Amino acid sequence: MEKKDKTQSRRKFIQNGARGFLLLSLGSVSAAALTKVTGKEYVWQIDPFKCTQCGRCATDCVLTPSAVKCVHAFDLCGYCDLCGGYLKPDANAQSTASENQLCPTAAIERRFIEEPYFEYHIIEDLCIGCAKCVAGCTSFGNGSMHLQIMHHICLNCNECSIARVCPSDAISRVPANEAYKVKGDFTNKKDA
Image 1 (tube, helix red, strand yellow):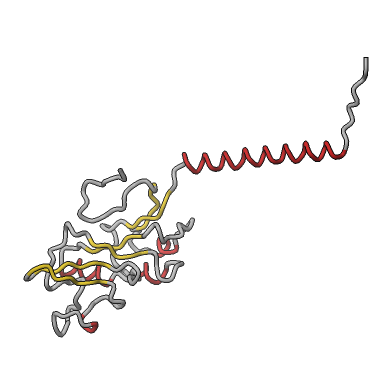
Image 2: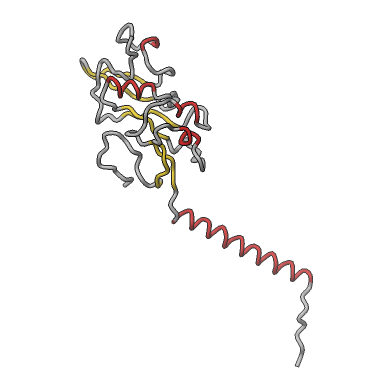
């Protein structure tokens, strides 16, 4: 009988080590991907019913402009000619002139529907999340405008800089698969 040589060559040792490392790396990447797919992801969310329109969303977000934008709940809107979220309370005229608009960046577009109704659309790229329109709509209207963190913009920081300074604790972490909290949406729809 022949005795097998139990010593390995240097080349064989390095090859076996590289294979082992590759398998271990592949297993780690697979486990991480599986955890990401099956694990719950959380995102930051503003509760529009707690928000006090303090204006800190525009100034305290790590992004410039802020990831917080105004959204409009059309189901609640009265389509008013004298929209408190669009026109300044002391406006000279009911026109779209910049001196009459409440929004400092002209992020609200006013569209005529029929006498005396108008639709108000938020231009997300122009909105800085200052909440001036939200405060005006809440004070003089039915509160159909509110702030929301846009998840496609938000960096989803571990500790949201806005949540740290929010005086009403309106910002919290929620599961990503839950719908945005929207005024007027009492069904709390989930993605279908």
